[in-house]
Amino acid sequence: MYGALDLGTNNCRLLLARPSRRGFRVVDAFSRIIRLGEGVSQSGRLSEIAMGRTLEALKVCAGKIERHGVARTRMVATQACRIASNGQDFIDTVKDRFGLEIEVLTPESEARLAVAGCATLIDPGADYVLVFDIGGGSSEIIWLDLTRMGARRHGQGRIDVNEAIVAWTSLPVGVVTLSERFDGRTVTPESFAAMSAVVGDLLAPFEAQHKFRERSADRNIHMLGTSGTVTTIAGIMLDLPRYDRNKVDGIWLQVPDIDAVSARLLAKSYEERIAEPCIGRERADLVLAGCAILDAILRMWPSQRLRVADRGLREGILTTLMIEDGVWRSGRRRRGGVRRDFRKVTP
Image (cartoon, rainbow, N blue to C red; front, side):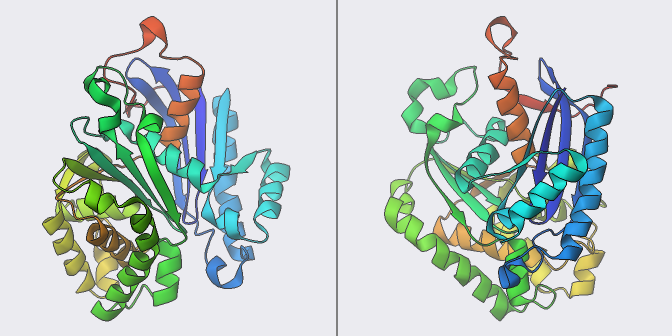
């Protein structure tokens, strides 16, 4: 049994799984919005209230890990714990209280794990792929050049995403930090444009250095988004009565449809956004900040195709751990690569 815990700025997520011929089967999962990074961008510290919420969630995670007898686990924390002056103190408290050893990821490790988690959704026929993860406190941007892999990208094995990564950056802005700065409850067209401009300014040096707009011109490219922002947009576009991961993960979106959903949300009040079944109260003040970040990405690198990934760090961690252990080595390696099988099994 393997486990992956992702302690983010906004969410605490746990995934427990067993290897299978199709990749891995989920045994148990947990996700809770904890907003650990609430106010960190202003105070520089994790607040007592936010840490209290997070400890309650981690208590549940520790119980699940112990109950299932997980043999190998990797637990990681991201931007909130990276930048908070008391981030390491909080990590130490978690270890003392629950025995959970959480490592604070570097931005590069976070970017690479995000790509590993959604690698099977990459179109091997593309020349370039832009993977992005809009988080609570940071946003990761990763460019893949599949042409470097030659004919191997059309083979039956996994795409070696580490080999295909040619550039990455981590922006110090996410849905929590941006919504706090611009008041995510009362977003106007002017404040939306201002949020997008802030992100565009952060993206500009990366583009100036690598010139991906020029390099990808007239080439077959697509985007792959792994974040609550893109899954929410997909759920709204599909007019789902409630969010359904099986209908969202892997879906292709057209950019004009994304723009239409963003405009629709921008026209709604905070209470009207709460009433959206794929948003709810916990995300109603964050969703437009995410849309603004996505808007900046699409303005910097125009693309017509965007694939939605309801997967990310946890899946990347599990996949990496199982590969390290040789789970799919030699005769046991299945065709088509590692995929997540969401059918639950009895532990």
